[in-house]
Length: 406
View (cartoon, rainbow, N blue to C red):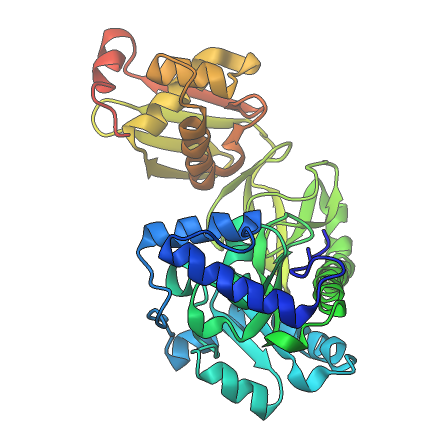
């Protein structure tokens, strides 16, 4: 998605910037503005005003300590592309006015590149490493607003909520994991308002595409290395080689798609088609194979007191406490059998109507984080090869579900 320009076609940049500052002053004072705010700006100002932020001062910026900032940098998926982005920004003919910023999904600035002059100006706004530039902290700005809108944003002069930011432009685009669509962070280019160039939006979009392409390429390289290490071990029988996030590098005797649950050392896991497995460390990944010849997964749900789910498969097993709501969901899925239940049907069974679909999906998502592939989706049901018994039954079971935890 391209970055929408903050300057209308044919408009003079200086004249439009002045109009935007007058627009800001009029809207904040409650009078009629000379130009109407764009939709993205109007929505953001409404959110910011509801939060109680002030336009005539610098609102309090949250700022991380050195250790927390270092930790976020080290664990950021964007850490390996900072040099690439800096190189892309450096090709701009007017790059001396550009401040390149990379923020995480919370709007915390992790890296910042630019000349000492532009960095010094940014320091006066608290626009530095470790500062949180979410809307709730600093009002309408490209980083925070791009995160809320889940879309690229360019803001100029008076479109920023804080008056202190009116001498700036900022252009930002969210970066997503190309494998899952998960939000990873934001790329932002900022600078003095009257240096905004039509190419800035294209620069930010190029940077976003570069980052997502690099992430995709490095993921493939990592899986290729893991495949070469693990393939000789797959001849022993049905098994998988996966990375630390569950992405499948190689498989034998079973097809599970591109990803399984994340393996944990010493923790039995259930993999569709393999049953209960014991993951084994293999270099930078895992070898996952059945714990025994029987692929059946046996569950026992005990409702006599606080709900407890027990798993048995091969020579492995575990016990996990459940909330009453999660136990109730499992009972309903057990009763539904292979046909399963839609989100609407599960909502009606749990709440008496189909108006709680969002709540149901959230509950099942939490249950799947706890139990992994034991629960399948589309429709919701117990996974194939899973056999579950429930104790007690009948009236005793209904009594166990009185006032379930919500």
